[in-house]
Image (cartoon, rainbow, N blue to C red; front, side, top):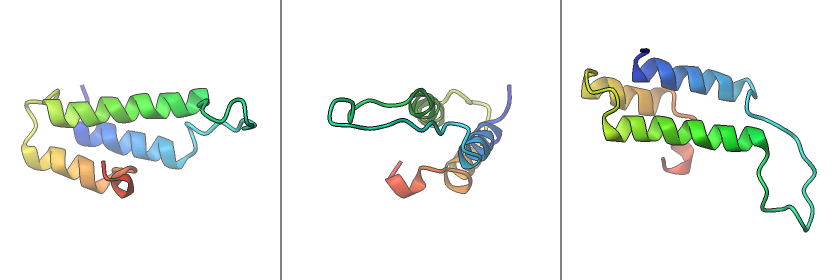
Length: 80
């Protein structure tokens, strides 16, 4: 099992490399739809967020969890 910090850093790298990006045409009928890439991004964000807050990595020091959140968090601008 990788550390939480390593997981967040890997997610950050994939996100910045447009791994989750998928272009699709938005119109008045599908404007609320999300691409598969967007759904995967949200799922992984949720997994990492809950791992950080729910103690899925109990052996890690709290400082490591905080570093994982602040150093590599692509969502820190969104208040996560």
